[in-house]
Length: 581
Ligand code: GLC
Ligand code: CA
Image (cartoon, rainbow, N blue to C red; front, side):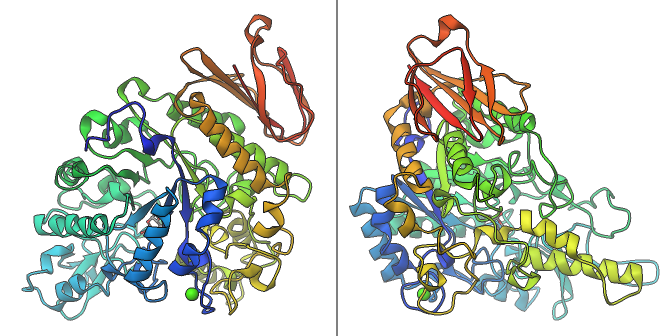
């Protein structure tokens, strides 16, 4: 009980590894990763230094949004395995001293969930009010319109009309993901029961999908028009961090979380201000342990789409990291440190340099960036190998994600209409997708140099990245110089030095556009971190002569670094170093 407030906690020093089950390892040759596949790789994860596994959804699902559309919360999808396979996996995890976190997706269900099937069956059905149903609006000509102008995150209107009962239901994501009505207390009770079901089976915590959008502004008002060419407008101001969200999460805490010692992390998109997210995290509020904020992940796209690339500046990245590293530490605010997950392209392609020459070095440098921040550390499958985006030569048919496909269709239609021609140039959009699509994180894990990277004996559900003959687990595990071996050392280094997990963060050289440098301090222990974000060599004066005394080099991505620290440090391309005293 009461794991929310101690300054040190198991879930703070832990390393979480996110598994995207469909692409991790296929044990039976049907091309789909599965629970038994994960089970067979537990020693691999333990060896890397992982403490907690987070599984992206494994529940029964039509996979309209890759399992984030759940049709039965109390069963695994047969493609991933049975509940017995789940129990066996969990046992294997616990036997190795690791823990397991489930993905809790309760803003919406699948439209195939029996709750929704009943809800849509008639206006009088007892489950009608479990979802958000509204009558149509009509314009002056009597044309039927959705109840408001909200845009869905992945398509046009956030509303879908049900012919049979003559009303619209709300879906903030795709049509197949109807939003639950959290205002109904029975819905909340049903969610608490789902949580207790998995806790009862032995799971150790939850990552809560888009948990900050469960409360919508009363009256569901029209969103302001920011794009006059469109009818549907972004409406997150009316559904993100809504009026009753904290009441709901506090209730979740009282009813469920407070009775167990769990790890909890909320996914909180549409919000950049730390002050807005603080309420979910501050221990005095008794809500969640931490959240995934979106400020860093949104750095390289314009507001209108995460699938479009925008140039970013190192000083912007530094500001974001500094702000969150320092935010309300005195009040117990705790970070979730991550740079990759299943919703973003690969970090080495975004923030490092994925060319032949610099890929491994810059992936290691980014590993140092991660392991030297305060917060619970998250590593995404394949990040430990330096996996990168798939190539520009792959056509749109290789992009399986509904977000990519829907955006592509939307833009193509717009262009066809504007030009009056069937044949429109889409190459610029493919340029952007190559940098930004979620698909890059979802290609099968690269285990070895055999066909399909050893991921499956059959045909993989998604094409394996072309570089697998060289970039794979089997090639990297035995190689001391590999990205994998570096990550293993880096995770061990973090565990040896509490200052890296808990220390105070102070930025040095704030306006430098090439080098990110900071110190961490905990009691009389200090760490100094220097990271070069470019190919070119550079020299920086980080500390005064008097202050360098006692610092010893503990980890870096180049060989032959002197043990002692001097006030001026010369860094080679993408070099990163940690000194500790
Ligand atoms: C979260 C998930 C993402 C999913 C969306 C809708 O952002 O991480 O993959 O598409 O929620 O459930
Ligand atoms: Ca399988």
